[in-house]
Image (cartoon, rainbow, N blue to C red; front, side, top):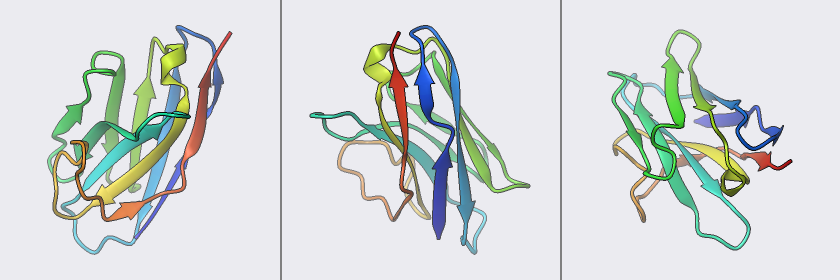
Length: 124
């Protein structure tokens, strides 16, 4: 299984950015893809996840109402639309996946597969 995150960059406070995660290698059609982030000096934070089979989603309180996760099963892609961004959203963002667990973003949850991450910086 491989995951490749892309779409990071520099955005101003209040701005928007969309991250993409390309997923390959899963033999089944029922798995969870999640977005995590890690800011310098902070613990890893699970922020959103989606079940690719039925579209069920989950969000951390820190991003609820601002971020939206979605999937395109025909292209094996998962997206994270980030709106009204704040400097506190600055972090390296990773997409990850697991064939068993949902929502996967609970602290301490085991995650089977990780991508390399993409940097997001929110600054004026």
